[in-house]
Length: 432
Ligand code: GLY
Ligand code: MN
Ligand code: MN
Image (tube, rainbow, N blue to C red; front, side, top):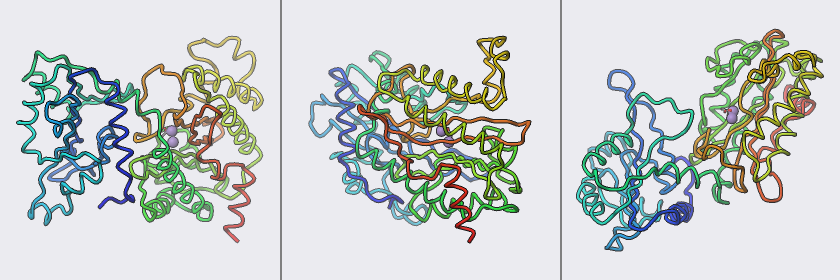
């Protein structure tokens, strides 16, 4: 059984339909599950579903393979899902695995076979096909040193069948996945709702003397009890830890006078939220913290407004930097003189805001999209400006998840408290 409630198979069916719409005649598509990476001794990591396989089938189980061959001679071979055959032995040692009927109901794929039938079917369908679409991780920022299951499969297939025309499935997936359907948006909203509950829970919990890991535990409790789990390693960074952008230790004590940066969110049905809030440990921001907080909030609001269909992400980033620069001048962190003499490759503002202002969000936290593709209706973007001031011992980032539509943006986190005064008043109320 999955942790999340059943998702209608029509979502995955329509995703496959959209993919088929992009294929030339006589195509064959193969998508593999992820390997379960080993750790130490006989231990393995917690399995992570392959996002493309889930997108196309709703199946997260290891070793599964989806084959799509729209022009296959036999109608029943046009979509096949291969699963590792379950057995009494597997049931005893590993527990529940999908039956053929369950896989059919989950994915809407009518033909489900056990994995041992794959080589024979693959040979047959290769003989019927001209164009072969295989998958690869083409995320621009991926840093891969281990050959994945998919990469092994590509290597072996091309070696065995060198005369076919091979294509990059990732290119098509990067075209399809950024545009979210209504069902996907509902799942993202559920992830945001759970995330919001986790954040509200913290407002009554955070106080001087609490460890960052105790805050993490509170969130884990709230997310998991609501069928979620951490969407990514939570960043719970008090004081100067907030200025380490990828801070993951979460071991420090939250001190009076510090602000606590929380980049924490839940996933639901493999769809991820991505939230950042920054709150005062003592329940009240200092005057300076509040000034910087309000500056970041203004940038966030400006950047949400700037998310319009047709705009290029790099132009949106430039606008975010312009908005931040105005605030940095007002805060006295940079001067007009700094700007005048700056190296255009290293603008002065980058000292205080050095990361991207947002990214597509979905089945991956940094979701896939074609590089340089303009925003379009259906995209969900994070919006996450920040100002980091190590010299003053704090950093502030705020992050909401926003849907782009033809008639404006929809902030999927609009009801998660963000105004400084509201956060202070909720913290005060929660403490009684
Ligand atoms: N939590 C990861 C990010 O904000 O991109
Ligand atoms: Mn984040
Ligand atoms: Mn983010």
